[in-house]
Amino acid sequence: MADHRLVTARLVLRQPGEEDLAAYNTVIAEDSDEREHRDALAHWRAHGFGPWVVEEAGQPVGILEIHYAGPGVTGIEPHEVEIGWTIAEARRGNGLAVEAARAALEDAFERAGPNRHGWIVAYIRPENLISQRVANCIGMRHEADGLTRSGHPMEIWRVRLPG
Ligand SMILES: CC(C)(COP(=O)(O)OP(=O)(O)OC[C@H]1O[C@@H](n2cnc3c(N)ncnc32)[C@H](O)[C@@H]1OP(=O)(O)O)[C@@H](O)C(=O)NCCC(=O)NCCS
Image (cartoon, rainbow, N blue to C red; front, side, top):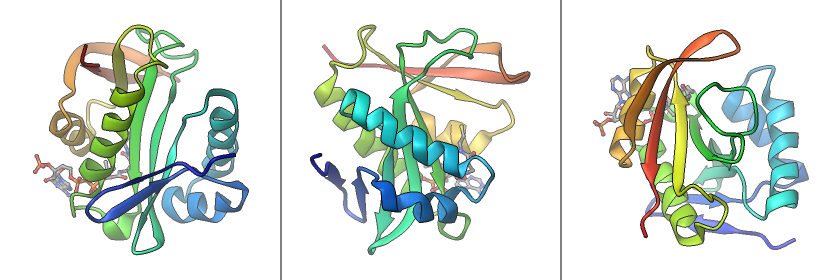
């Protein structure tokens, strides 16, 4: 499989491989990391795009999710493309989430094909103001409230693909 990558001023976003469970452990450090790693590999295999491992100076510092939303979130169609971000705790507050998200979004814009509806979507907890700042910085807008995922209220943010 091709090794896709995106390069920004400080970061490399690269397609994850089998060996990247350690990167997921480092960045996410939650029970979900193994599942997220497996899902990311499967998504790349099935669709030719998917979540990125974010590296700074050769070290994993983030996971930049971009994938079909799938079922389970009210207000979002399963075939919409969803974006999300996690930066390792030690490297937060340095603009890395915005830098990585911008690169992933531009790449999605260029390849626009995956999203038949012309939108990229994010869902964010109302109390997660930092994540809302990231969304706002990359041009997303808050569209709806009061939606739920696994019983938690979520805000839906979207940005329209150009053209
Ligand atoms: C959300 C998250 C990815 C942000 O990563 P980050 O690299 O620290 O974000 P950035 O440095 O790019 O900052 C993004 C914005 O938030 C602001 N910000 C960052 N840390 C902040 C803090 N501790 N307090 C207040 N504002 C903060 C920045 O100033 C910036 O806004 P601005 O450009 O308008 O000034 C990171 O906090 C994280 O991984 N959180 C846990 C996982 C999570 O919540 N993911 C999102 C799920 S929807």
